Amino acid sequence: MTVSCAPLTLYGFLNVALTIDGRQVIGWSEGDDAVLVERSTDLGSALTGADRASVVSITADQTTAITIKL
Image (tube, rainbow, N blue to C red; front, side):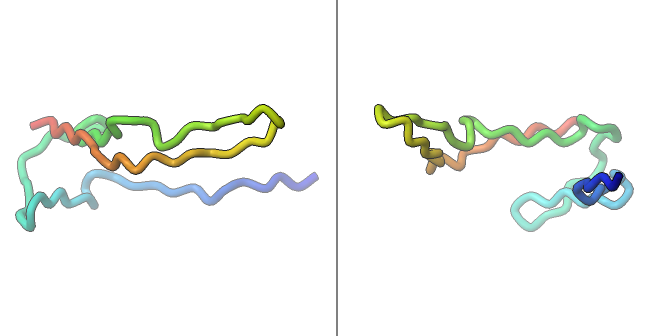
């Protein structure tokens, strides 16, 4: 039996550069939570009509909060 899996992507913070407005930010903490990027709203929502037809409505809101642990 063959199991199909999505490709695995790995990264480490030694290979990450944080740039804000064209300037590199240095001195930030190491760890999985050193840089957090969170959307202000859900990407979209599923809607089901009276005829049971479904559609996914994608939001136009692209606001995001970025938290940097120093």
